[in-house]
Length: 273
Ligand SMILES: [Zn+2]
Ligand SMILES: [Zn+2]
Image (cartoon, rainbow, N blue to C red; front, side, top):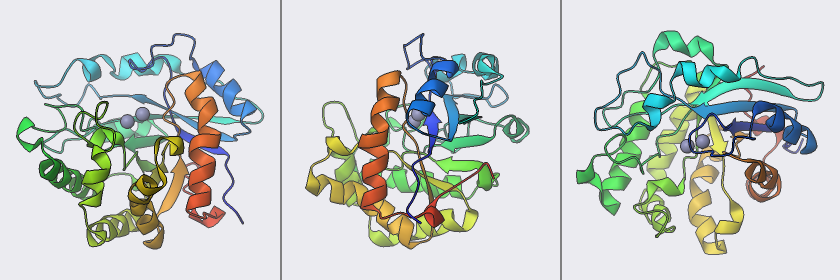
């Protein structure tokens, strides 16, 4: 059966500092999910667990978004049509410490971990690695380090693995992340995705198709084609921080990627079984 577009497991509310929209609250998110015909959604506000020390070089971004900050949305509203799950998006610092302690993991139904927040200089990447080659090396090493950890993998999603944030000055030079991805051989991706498939973690689909030319799509989609070949399971994530982003994701992110990869229901990741 063809992959059914009924989930969005990467959504930020106004609790995430980068949202900037005070009206973007769980009730409004739930309403939008109903309008898009979704049946399962997950809130994934940015979070760093207070039980884990944060590097001195880190900005205040994560210091503020601690447990007391993000828990204020609980309990999440529910509806007859949509199940609203509670998760978060954490990070991993440049020493490969992830921003959540073992004992805090039970607080969340789903935890997404990106290794690609390479715009956070001083937290996720050291300045000395700030070149195309350096970033490619860091990209692979961070994935390997994460996958070596002992985590509850059945409820872990590897977020935006091909994010533009991999690139240097991504706002001025959007295509740089593609240059970095292109420099990583198929065999490396095969090894990484084989591990993800074995661990049973999910691979996030979060690619804004209109941003890419046809040629660029070949670059950004190559990792996912390999992930599918290696047996990975996928979930859709809008990474919406406000209403219009969530509303646009169905047609511009989810539909095209599922068609591109010809996904079926067997390819779907579901941490909420
Ligand atoms: Zn992110
Ligand atoms: Zn996010």
